[in-house]
Amino acid sequence: MDYRAGQPGIQATAGGTLLVEGSWYRPALPGPLISATAGLRDHAIGRPAYDTRIAARAPYRLKRKDGPDADGHQRLSCPALGAHPGLMCPLRAASLQPRDGRPKVLTPPPRTAEGLPADRDHHPPDAGASYRQDLPYGSPAWHARYATLRNTIEGLNGYAKDPARQALAAAGRRHPSPAPAADQPRPGTTSSRATRPPASPKQADSCSARCQNPAPYPRTVTSTVQPVRHRQFCR
Image (cartoon, rainbow, N blue to C red; front, side, top):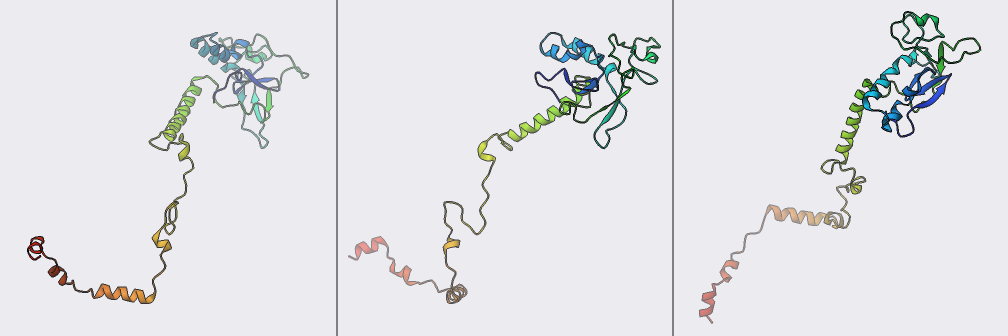
């Protein structure tokens, strides 16, 4: 999903971690990376610089350890932990070697009462629930999925509002009146079938008899019709 004006940047916090545009990051995420989307929309940076900053967020993103539990809490671990940490942090001595060009935390978070920040944080389900999404916002994978879904929705809306098809934009076609029953007249009209009384048994027998034995055509009709010229001479 995309975000409206005022929504990009830090959207929620939980256990010292930051929810930045749908994904959880360590608090050591640099400020220019946090404000990348706002800078692009304000025309403070260009598209190449924006793509570079979005890609630079990846080493600071928290790692998912397992799926949510029965209560919806999910465990996320620090990216400076593990056998192959993707981030160098002064608070994690094992992450400082080897020096292979990985990003390094220049301003580490403050120590907790136990001495170090928690290795794994249990994030509640309601923390930034309306902003969270699986793919990192602004990444190539996010653009590919978002463009596909957006085009699908826009195409469906165009089909539904097309006057030659569903025409949902026309208010008169949203609530069509139900068709009348076969034995009931339409509104404003009368039906002879509904108002005509049923025929009696005597009338029914008379009609069937006339249909079976039709009367011969009277020949006197043609004999009484005289030509116009004949009537003129017979006056």
